Image 1 (tube, one colour):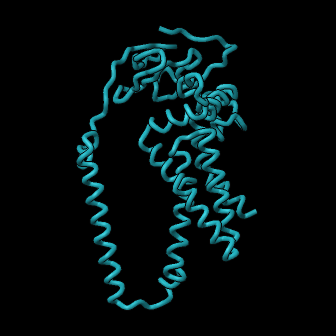
Image 2 (cartoon, rainbow, N blue to C red; image 1 turned 180 degrees about the vertical axis):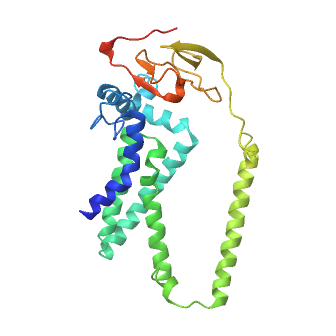
Image 3 (cartoon, one colour; image 1 turned 90 degrees about the horizontal axis):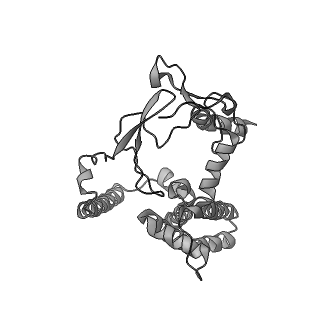
Length: 280
């Protein structure tokens, strides 16, 4: 009971934001969508969810004689350095999981198996349905983190050792010195990598200048907005530093909530059966 209340309280900010932005507390899930002026329809929410889950549509069709899953994975892998790093972590985690499983069996630490199950199931789910690293980074780092915890526990004997047993001052100072030198070395390596990378070296002090794109003015239902031009039928420019409002295309059923206040008053979606507006 208490756990359910705490969980609800922790998730309530997410529910509130989703309701404010889409009218659906579990967006992009269509469950419990509310009938609000700005709400997405259940069909639209479902379409967004499908676009995320069926990630194979992000890429072109595979050539003949190449398994579709292999084609999609290779394209996904070369699409981002972050994807390559995540793949490396997953491969290393497979080896670490074997070691953790042995430790769990030898010492009868059955709780470790539950943690392994969470990491493996979460990673598999992410890779199958939505291989976006920011969505699954929590699952990816579970096994390496668990392995590091086990190694430290074996070296120290017990983490409570650091809190309960008095450590000689000379040993503390030695550990601090080693930690400081290691930190400085790591910071130097990171700085060197950033400096050598021509795309990011200027970000050490100032953020990169916001990109610009060619825009066209559009209007729908009295709403004037900017829209980035299409590069090709498959590619679109982005708004970047464009003046708001900016969008690819506003639907015909979007109107100003209060025309006298303009976009400050917000927007509403008119029911389709009430007719659509004018587009210019």
